Length: 210
Length: 210
Image 1 (cartoon, rainbow over the protein chains, first blue to last red):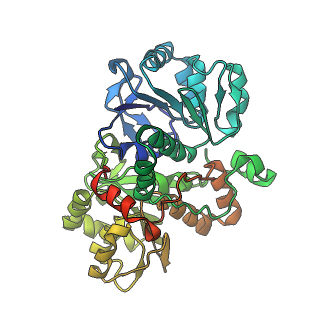
Image 2 (tube, chains in turn purple, green; image 1 turned 60 degrees about the vertical axis):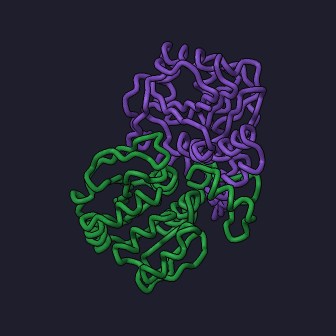
């Protein structure tokens, strides 16, 4: 089983790392981090570089292909790259599962892989889904045939576990949930954007670093 | 505000990245990833390198110092390094908060920073806490004065949010919970090691990659 995860300058570190953690615990599974050219990528917060092991053009096939999200400039740069889009389309033709975390769905959309499909994405990116011919669901995880898309950042952990369940069954996936001690305790209960207060939304937009 | 996070060969990627994500969203905050020598560190699963921006010896002070966990060999190598232990002790003398995720508590313990304190850690590392003079709590997060320790892997996200709350107050931290869309949906409810089934524990120990 080969799982390919894209990195790019501006990627939100927790998007690829959160979806990777449960998948990397599966037996007989290889995770291949790739970037467009194979060089290290700076995370969106600017504090860390993630070093992939290959350029995407040098990977011939993938059982699972996953595209994380990131800062708008980073997403835009991926969307603008015809070479990257065509490598994503090429790999997609070899996958059993193609998926995205957060605004990674915009890259899948730009590669024309979500046309006519239902898709989840970052709540502030929802309007772009129609532009790519997809229908925004607002769900934390949406599966439409082999296309699995998730909402923002931490939803990637849930996506990783859902894919583990699909690949390896309930008992292995439930054990991975234990291995990650995934017994989360959100302190405020404010993590769902669909019932977030205007005050918290405005702090996210105007005060926090994104 | 300067937050220093240690990396080392064998680190579990989600430990430093999970605790970092909420903290990196705080305004006026700099995250400095360090390693013993400043060179990139291979994650415990072997699939990615994380590039720090400095050697720990070159960082003069920190408001917050955080030590993630990782594979036993990686933890042991950190514990064995007298230079690393003394740099951790030196930085700790400058912090308002010193903390750990998962088995990172063993490194804090080896630096003699948990003696006489209550501490959380990875459930399979609990017996080591007494060796370092600390009392294992079994909690997801334990705070003892300025020492904040957490349980396994995903508990680091909760630790990061707890530190955000302490530093920036409820409204900012609640907004960070929204920005991360931290509305987790563990599919099985098996993430708590204190009520895990023997079957899942044995799959974790014998079948999964750690």
